[in-house]
Image 1: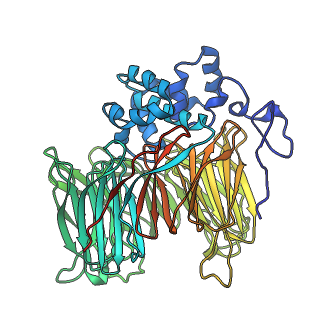
Image 2: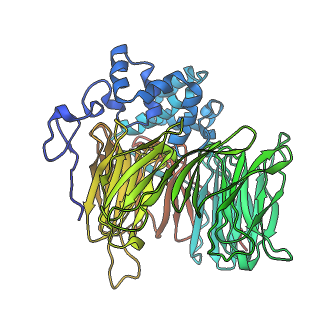
Image 3: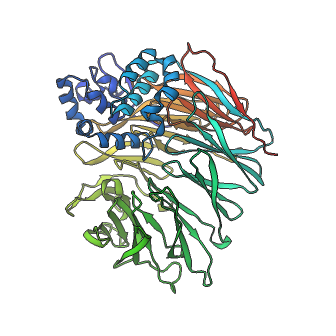
Length: 638
């Protein structure tokens, strides 16, 4: 059982730990006042609201988060940060102002009619997506009760045994792949650019099992790997339909496929067979000015140790290159840099390390971290495409052991964590822009009993490190002084998994119980934690208990809703309330077991897949909403 601080409601302040911390020690965002209503919103939404606050409130908030003030002054930074806060690398198509009347206005006119008038008057503002996102979030938060209506569902197929769902990054498409039996599958593309319901625009039948699918970040390309050694490449045409662009056959001996997606390129590392069976084909299909796709094979040696890393903008590729005549476990000490030019990717430079290369991570488009067996280096890529070593840090040995300290890379902060297993401590080391190395103080972490059971996970923003060994869990967080400290710790005999909300402000911990009568572990309790940044602590905001095992949890993209599904065939919808806790706002029961629950990027709809191979598209509404018409789509699989 998890023990620790729990959030409770107090008449004078927002959230107070059970231990009775004085209100004066609670961060300003938790105090009652003009800013309290914005405490639970993403930082970019607050930045937009700050434009309309009195100067006194603005100065007060600047002391809490200086980044918000910077966002107010920079429109391009607003767009980029808003997109990343909503789980995407690009602005979702849904938030474009020309789609407001067709997609958002009908829903918002029922939920909050006054907001429609206000938004129509603001449609020409450059920060309209921020205002739209804030309006949707505040509307959902202001309603004590919500409803779930099924507005669309696919054909009921009783003999089907599984289904899959994939959302495009731009929020425009949903891919549903259905498996009637092991040898017959279907890929269905649904267009979400229609009011009230998704529209199926393309369907493809496959004679083999679908292993994995990947959307490009702009939503124009999809890759699908099949179980029969085929790799399909789909492309969206100008008519808004999908077509099969190319199919490649993967050698059975090298069936591993790595798909690397970014806003500008889609790069797949596909093994091919040649006369010597030594080459690996890096299939690069960059999009040119004429909206055409070009194929290029990169000569990359195929050995298990070889890997491929792409910069965020897709202009650079870094590959680790082992020697051809070496054994697979031989140390890899060389890497190559490829730069994208008008002729495709061209090899520009190489780098040889003094010891085996372990990890390569891009920090920025032209900066990367390189970890070897004995050191960590910061490398810069010049405009001419040359790799230059900017700084290095020698990995020390543990105080009471002969082994080196273990390293966990944190590219979001241009640094890494050093784990001393003899002292059971962790400290953060990072590189400044001028190459100066800064070492933090050691922080007590977990006593490591078995290295094979230890897992390290860093959130996308790089400000939280989760350490667990199936017996204990410890979270290290960065405080406002840019120092790392223990923000949460628990001891339990059960195993558990963790997941962050898109805005990184909420953390879900699921406990798993093992039973000899059940082949799979089950989770009955879900603990939701909320991060108090001024105190740098994770505090309990809700404990969700269920009589039946909870199968999945999902946050909305704006992080104001949380959905759970259980083996009792029901979906529960929780909302983040003004009392700084998660409260149940709606529930819906289904006739079959629920496979998955996921929010659409518009934050107004849910997708639910059930065991009868049915995709349910649910609309989030209010009590006064009339029952919408249910649309259905029958897949002709025979």
